[in-house]
Every structure is written in structure tokens, then in C-alpha cells.
Image (cartoon, rainbow, N blue to C red; front, side):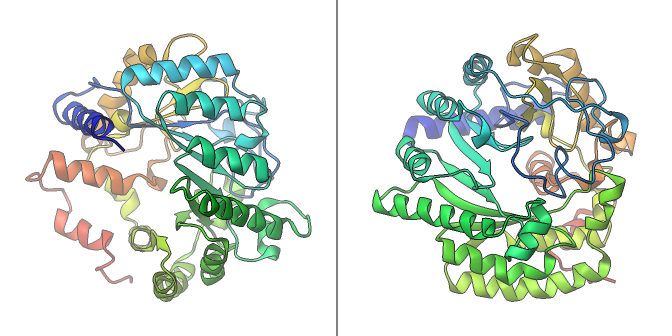
Length: 403
């Protein structure tokens, strides 16, 4: 990052903080990061996936006002037109956004224009992160990703063994786990051969009842693959039938012991990880702080993040399926400053008054709690919480005993 881009980022972040602190509903600049679905098509059927899980009671349509999976019976697979994408990149550049995560509803590498899309974003100096299952990578694509300077790749692995991998992904294909591992290793080798720092390679594991007992195997996978980092993410069960994926109190106790041992194993091998944050989340989950968190502070997602689906629908985040507008009808800038988005910001900032989740939002399962706590501490250093900031912070750090 050069000095100019560094100053741009600092200025942008300051404007986000200033808007969140002083304004009830307006944003002074665009979101820091945009989660972008370029396609709904996927070659996997992962159990915990909102779009493609075989557990879904009714596939939902992404073009209606209520995106709750339980309330929709149609599911239209779509992919973003490349010209719509180009216009979106131009709009995001105008509002100051510099980080794009290509991920979400489907596997990005099933989109036939993925190469051109990444090229255009990099030409406009965006930081690009791609989330992929890694199954469609080959040597040519890997060479391109290194040469173009993609900033990071997240590989969704979600298992530590071939048997669990087949169970989680719904792909009863022998050797697929090993193939994905080989693809990751090839990309890591090409990066080393070209003596490049990017893309940073990270493995992502959504932890559920299907895989929580394979933490050490997951770390071994990461070490053998030559990646930079490993991240653990708590499962979000979007459907009633998927609730068995949620970790029980007993599962969490076992996992907390295993993950502390795994920390030592990862650190010994020089592998970066987010296990401290994941332990914090487990402590919050066990103490039910996630349910009680947002009545204590505001949610600032309406200032720092936005989600854009393959059909053009714009939403605040992955766990709030509330449509703000559609980029086929209006520009992102118009949507970002629209009355609908402003109303969302107003409501999310007043959680303490509402004392309940926003309509169509799964706030009790929010994975952005740590980010919102950082915002709260910066913007309101002297403002106490209802339950006491000391107690909440202690639980976040895992200092309160689990009953």
C-alpha cells in the first residue's frame, strides 16, 4: 500500500466513524467493504448454506421483498451480467469503497466472466478477496490470480477429513477433498515461485456439529497446504431443519478445550489464526450474550458494509435479508443514500430503544458483534452499557466462567 492509498483509507474510515457518531441515518462516504455475489450457481450443496443446502424447506427467490427462506417457495439461480458489474465497480469507486469480497450465493469460479471481472476491479485499484471452495481452480487460473495481484483467497473447506468433507458438502465424490488440497498447494507453490506476497491464502472452516471434533485435522490441512492463515466461523442455521448443526453446550465445552490445544499447534508451525476471537464468540454463545448484545449498543453495519446479490439486490449484511434497492433500477450511490437505507441506519442505531431485532434480521446470530463493539468503544468511550461494559468485555475475552 503506497502513501496515497493509505491516506485514502484513513480518510475513508474517519468519515465512516464520523457518520456513525454524529448522524442518525446519513453516511458521509460509501461502505468500507462490499460483499458481492456474482453468481448463484454452485457445484456444491453444503449443509449449512442458505442457498444450496438440501435441508432448505423451500428454496427462496432473491427478487422479492421478504427474503426469509421459510416464506418463499421459488429459487431463481442468477448470475450478474458483466456490464452491470462494470457499472457497479465504477459506482463503488465514486463513493470511496476500496474492498470487495467476491463470495456468497454461489461458487465464483462457475461464472464464465470471473477473469474479466477481477481484472476490471484490480485495474480500478480495489482490494479483492475471493471466497471459493477451490474445486475449480487449475494451474492457469492460479497463475492469473498471482499475476493480477488478487489480495486474498478464502478457501471454504469446512472439514478435516475426506469423510466429513463429503458429508458437509453433499458431494459423494471420492478424492475430492484431496483434489482441493492439491489445488491450494499448487497456488501456494506458484506464489512462492514468483516470489509474490499476494494473494494471501486463508482457509475458512464453518464450525458445526458435523466437524467441531476435527479442529486439529483442519490445522494440519492448513500447514500441509502452505497457506498463511486459518479462520474458524460459527455456523448459522438458516432453517429449522438445520438447527441440529448448532453447537450444544456440551459441544462448546469440548471445542473450547480442543481449540486451546490447537492454538499451540498452529503457533508452533507459524500459522496465523483467529482462534482467540473464536473462543470469545464461543463464550458469548454459551452465555447467551449474542441475544442480549444489541440492546446494549448500536449496530453500525449500515455505515461500513453492504451486500449485493447476483440479481442486483442490495442488503445491509448476510444476516439481514432486507432489500434496500436493486442496482438494475438505481445506481448504488442512489441506493446507499436512499430513504430506505437511511431508515435502516436509524433503526439499527436505536437498538437500545427497540430492544429487539430488526425485521428480517437474525441479529441473535450476528458474526459482526466484535466489529460493532470496536465502533462502540471508539465512538462512546465514556458511555456505559446496561449490563456494564466491564462484564461484557470480560465475557468477550472468555474471562467469565461457563456455567
